[in-house]
Amino acid sequence: MNSTKTFYVTTPIYYVNGMPHIGHAYTTILADVLARYHRAQGDDVFFLTGVDEHGQKIQQAAEDAGVEPQEQCDRMALHFKNAWEKLEISYDFFMRTTADFHKKAVQDVLQDLWDKGEIYEHEYGGYYCVGCERFYTTKELVDGKCPQHLKKPEFIKEKNYFFRMSKYQEWLVNYINENPGFIQPESRKNEVLGFLNGALEDLCISRPKSRLSWGIELPFDKDFVTYVWFDALLNYVTGIGYKQDEDRFDKWWPADYHLIGKDIVTTHCVYWPTMMKAAGIPMPKTIFAHGWWMVDATKMSKSLQNIVKPLDLVDKYGVDPVRYYLIRDMVLGQDANFSEEMFIKRYNSDLANDFGNLASRIATLIRKNFGNNIPKGNNPGLDEREIQTNGEKLPKEVQKLISEMRLNEAIETILSYVRSINRYMEMKAPWKLVKTDHEKAGLVLYTAAQGFCIAAKLLEPVMPGKICSVLSIFPLKSENESWGNLISGEELKEFQILFPRIQAAPDKPAPEKNMKTDEDSLNLISIDEFFKAKLITAKILEAEKVLGTSKLLKLQIDTGSDTRQIVAGIAEYYAPEQLIGKTIVAVVNLQPAVIRGIESNGMLLAAKKGKQLQLITTSDSIEPGASVG
Ligand code: ME8
Image (tube, rainbow, N blue to C red):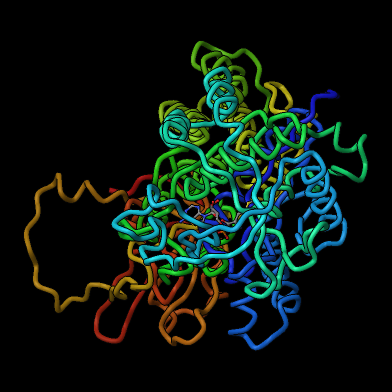
């Protein structure tokens, strides 16, 4: 689909005084997900992110590191770029405020405002917080302290340059009231209106070089540099050609979304609109402030040293689950608590169980029963039509939720469709049906596979890597998520397990369970208790030794409805090659365990006495998946 609609989204530009953390990653992933959804809809998208390189914090960080400020910026910009590469951030331009084009454009804006009398010189005394790099009015201080850093700011008196922000107060209040979508969510809008209830003061936009030299020099006074926020906010327009390339600027501006955290609402919703108004720049459509990721109910931040490093998580669990968790578990606008335990729960329930398992079941059953070719979806019945109708409605529902910035609900809607396909599979049991009605079983698998592809495609902006790889195994007519794009009769490519389950508690390996032996005491159990264990026949497809142990083998087994991995303590009795092709008996409804870091989804049965052990096997004439009992 071709469309001329443009979509311009920005993130804050992050300070280069510390490494990227999960909070920075969150805003950037959020912008990336929106950018990818819009690209998928055919919009022309521009996604701007970058770094904020001037000001006292950076000068200080450079001093602490014993390097020149520019070197500090160069090093840190690289860290952010590397992090975004690992997180698969598809930005269109990486902004650096030390770039010459930006410095020049900022100076041009300053000169214009100076020439128009929007900036004036004044001797000023005020409470200055180094952490925030801004002056606070006494009204804004809480118990005389900066509300962000909880430190007493310094009282500083000096000559400075001021932007006539106060004169735009009434205009701004009216603008916010007349444009309800301008500041979102509603709670932030009300916060800004509350702030604007009091008198708005003019904004000090300079710093004397005697105190701070690392900044953009004022074009009309070389003894001063520009206040870092005045410089930084302008990145949203200089990054798309403002004061350099009018056509480019006109193509993208006004921005659809400035995404920010709730910590920088005043600068974005008061300073920035008044600056734009004075400079004659039209207002962006929406400034959206999300909540904070907290750790144990405290905001994560560089200064509090409680940060979660996104790349550590990515190294441990892969990029797609990290992106998924962050977008799925934050209600936009509210705070959310980050915990690795919650991450693992979400991963296991949504990704390993609901989504990954469905893909694995479909692929295994098609491989086993349909020569690995997509079966025909002929003669759909009521149940199939329901899956189809819901699958056809899904893209619109998801699109609507995304346009309302309800991304977590969009994901939940997709996942609940996936769950409905899982229930349909359970109900139809194609692994049984195939024995009596091959065509019907084919219809079930076709329907499930087609529904799965639609759901997967809609999750692609959130998990681009995994979704691209799983969709690439299905023969699809087109890239979009429409019913009927799955081609019957064409081959399914080789399937790899998408999301292996993770053990429940992070960093605590599950105890290695030894096989029960004849020394164990005999406890009587009821027949019901016995039938709780689901015993089936399974065929061993692959076997290999687990490195670093003499006892364990890692097996891939075909259970008739999926291919799964189990770890078994039989290496002292069987060589891996002896096992391949054997039909064994396995327990398949055990809670997964991680043994020596390897996931095990079940247990095989063996007879053991003294130093002897023999697997319980059946003849090859019985198919995998036959129940034992
Ligand atoms: O404020 N939870 O840069 P910064 C969620 N340079 N998001 C968080 C977060 C958390 N715990 N911590 C940080 C600056 N963020 C200025 C911006 S823009 C013209 C200049 C995210 O490095 C969130 O988006 O302190 C927040 O607004 C931003 O990082 C602050 O990044």
